[in-house]
Amino acid sequence: MSAKLFTDDHAEHILKANFGTRAIHAGQHPDPVTGAVIPPLSLSTTFKQHSAGEHNGFDYSRSGNPSRHAFETAVAALEGAKHGLAFSSGSATTATIVSSLPAGSHIVSVNDVYGGTYRYFTKVASALGVEVTFVDLADAANVATVIRPNTKLIWVETPTNPTLRLVDIKAVADIAHKHNTKLVVDNTFMSPFFQNPLSLGADIVVHSVTKYINGHSDVVMGVAVTSDEEIYTKLAFLQNSIGAVPSAFDCFLANRGLKTLHLRMRQHAASAQAIAEALEASPRVENVIYPGLPSHPQHALAKRQQKGFGGMISFRIKGDLETANAFLRSVKFFTLAESLGGVESLCELPATMTHGSVSAEDRAVLGITENLIRLSVGIEDTEDLVADVLAALESAVKL
Image (cartoon, rainbow, N blue to C red; front, side, top):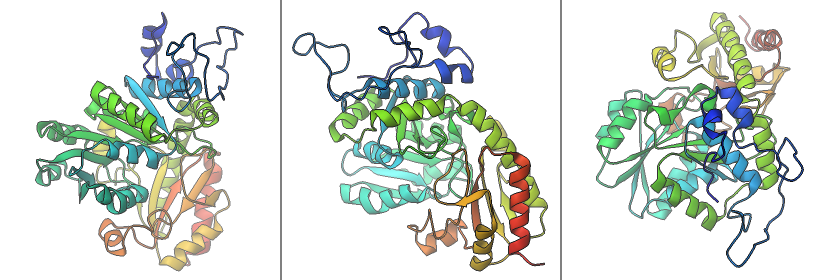
């Protein structure tokens, strides 16, 4: 079933509302039978039909489920899209989009891309007859130098993971469309609260729902949104045909998390700004990468295309791998673990964890050094997190 936005009398009113109001009301209809304010979790795999082929919009849960539909509708509303499609993971979302391309297609990807996406592009897409070229997009004009007649997609993350480089979405979109190519933007780090790539010209926006949208580190899930009818039709067919769909329970949980996204993102960003400033002032830190700092080389772009700076920080500790590990062992409120975007604070070493699948040579080019630490700043009290980071630095780095 299509995850189109509201068709009831309140549709236009809800879609014109501010972000927090949309997060709570989009896709949420009181149950018509019981009046339950929160739509019930629909675990059924199949649905009664009035006659053969005639039903209320749902026939089999792989093809469509009320809980999934509610979530897809809500995310689409927050990104300003007409359609949303949920998948069993962010990686499944990527794989389905690539599967929509004809054999012999070419993809241009930002070089500083999530390790799992890099692995899929380099190890799996090639076996499907799809070639990927990686390019530095600090200057958007670079994308034009590698576009070919068979280039079907340009794939962008902004900010990138883990070095938080930014890509000018509008500039890349303009180039893509001049070459009859579609632009995909992975918006996971910013969430729909801080950035809306469709409004800047992107054709598809993807999220690892596992991260900020769900926000509680208890769901693995992905989503793609678009306003392009042709793209939606193709992806909806593949969603059903490949079947990499999330469970109804995961959709219910993710929709629940989505309702507080605006509140959580404000706290993530406020604490991240405070921590980034404290890190930058520390003599135990080599350099700090955070778009909210004036020292970030693309700070002006961040202010232009984002509504905030997010909860992710990367920094290089003064020292080596041993020093970095000493820091990671010393923090009390940051848990050493992969992933990001949950209510709890996490820390990790990209070179040996999230980006271990990236070759050492490519890590060196990208600046993913053994002393580069990534922080996912949670929503704990800001003062506690700042104190925790500074104490761990003092323990790890002896001046």
